[in-house]
Length: 91
Image 1 (spheres, one colour):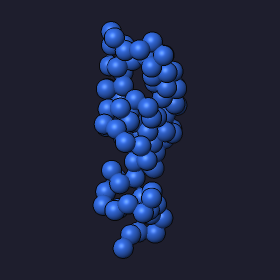
Image 2 (cartoon, one colour):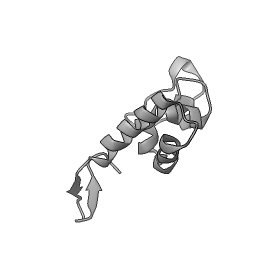
Image 3 (cartoon, helix red, strand yellow):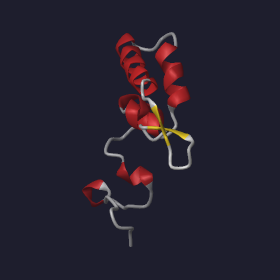
């Protein structure tokens, strides 16, 4: 039994946790690099910032990460329901 709005896992695979919803195979690190916006929402900002400037990162990957991080940083904080500053991007 799931809560209203639950999105079932793909391909009728067992639906036990968030890992059941990953559509691609790979490591957590690899999936964060191929889906950096999702990674940011899930707390991978320090890792993505490190990879974006790390020597040895493929130039195309580094450029994409820098662009995504610049977009992330550009979000303007908006007042939250308790007066605290919350970001429009839910961070």
